[in-house]
Image (tube, rainbow, N blue to C red; front, side):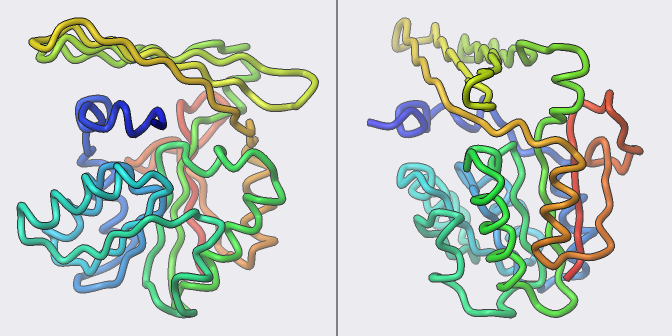
Length: 246
């Protein structure tokens, strides 16, 4: 059983849907109905929020359990969401060219691909499925800040309602050039004590690298922000939000 399948029932507590993120996406997409692709959708929180706002949403994720949770939201709330299991490197196999007005991939998901070559491939496939005036939104942790301040951990996520703690640590591997992202989820709730550990390898993509990859993938008018409230990006921003036009 995969890590995200194990923690799927707690996912919405760890990563609740943010109003700033949803607002940013809606502003970029324009007035609904527009066709939106949610890449690495997780449990479908953003897909559900966008569908409620009147958008036609397609949601894909590599993990089958996450797609199941997205479908639960769809059927429970009667939403227009097309959800399916799909690797972001297989987007071109699933969707026609010019299919979407907007594609977004947030939550530090794209760096799980682990190489610039694979990230460029994914970006090209996202670009190909966008309409001529379409928009791509990418959000990752600001690795410029991670290296500048030698950061080895991210703030612990806590939810007292269910006794949840999600602990996240980084360790840079000089040999591979990747970051070993170690997570520990502890639950002390009505079902007793539970603990889930996981390690994933992430590519620490710097802002200059992502800009270069976006341009190589065919995006123009690339904009950088330090958050989903349009704050100016700098090396000390907690996150990197990038928006590009076809």
